[in-house]
Image 1: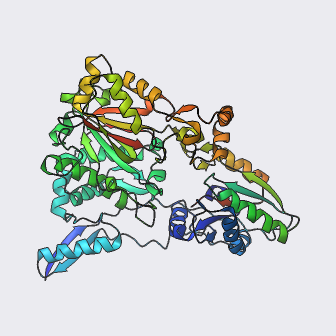
Image 2 (image 1 turned 90 degrees about the horizontal axis):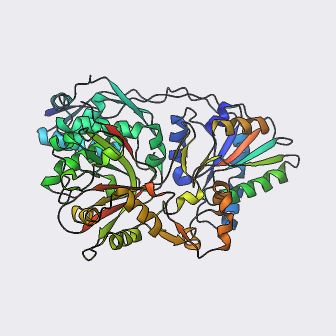
Length: 97
Length: 448
């Protein structure tokens, strides 16, 4: 057998780590942010999510958001994230396809 | 969503089944692999509201669970260490090389064509093309936050078929990719066919045998350097930036331009100052420009003999509304909130020398062509917004709400005249290329 020894092309990566937020004990009475990044259809999904959450948890309140920058995808700035975090207890989003 | 989790806010996001792997990988790159998802069977785009409602209903339990059930923190321990050396055995060297290529395909490390084996000897020979230390970090490349050492770039260059003379050009291209204003993450991961168009200016491109003339963007011996350099950029995006199809490159249909797209400007045949001079560099400097583009349209005209007529023909290429960037300025600007960058949507025109001479002999420079294109490339508002989200336009340009009452009014397809970048490329005959761009080009000097 003949050996071919080569260098691995794959790079090392910079690892990031974020501690997940503590989850809510209960949703009833919470204020839920509904974040739409403006991709088509996301608003309809959030509309239905709001209706369903309200049906099951009648005392839940809602606030709508989108990012303050961007184009077909609107993104949250750090300031947007700070503001949302100060106004709601949890967020349901449509940010992916 | 990760930024909200960082701030102590639990989140859950709707994600289509086909994008779950992408979402998980993306969340992992940002440090929270377990970010909760509410999975729906198809993307929400192009769906009727009633169908979206049904999908949201089916995912409702995941929404509740995502906000109320504990999420595991990412420890980084599930990523195996990289073995820097790989060994393939075969009946002979050719057989071992064939096994290497098949393994690379299986791992997703290949662009699909056979790769040159990055042996120690080949990599060492490649590194002779730069004065930099092999361990020097050129950049960290998104979307995977891969560490682009000189050595890893040399490995990509070897695999692509480059010679040492190409390595400084590849390093410059990678610096372009890593510029925050490039917003590489968006272009690498998108469902759109973003291809890095690499344009080389200056003497180092000529030394590296970059073709600027006949069939500069095509196959064949004269463009061999173009082909391998462009290929090395793609392989670097894959194995250094971790842009992998189906994992972190969610391109819906793809594009042959993504394999390799590279040329030099034909400075000798250009009546104007070289492109890189318009970008603020000295004429004698060598530069690499990278502009992500979606697609290409021929700029064919054998008939026109005046600049006005030629510009009118060229402008028709810019009015293709099925191309995502056309009129995109109406809904905002490509923006990366992490770096507070914003990009206008640019398009690159590679004008052939004959057409350039028609403009130049009447005293037209780039600025006048840009202005003429800006005035001629207009589309009725109704047509331009056929595929635009009205709510996005209302946020981006509330001052333009009056346009809705004037659907037939012609509206510019780009934000400003400087959104047309112009370089001279090609051989004889009146045929150039119009590239529909994604965001703005980035230019950096080539350094050894």
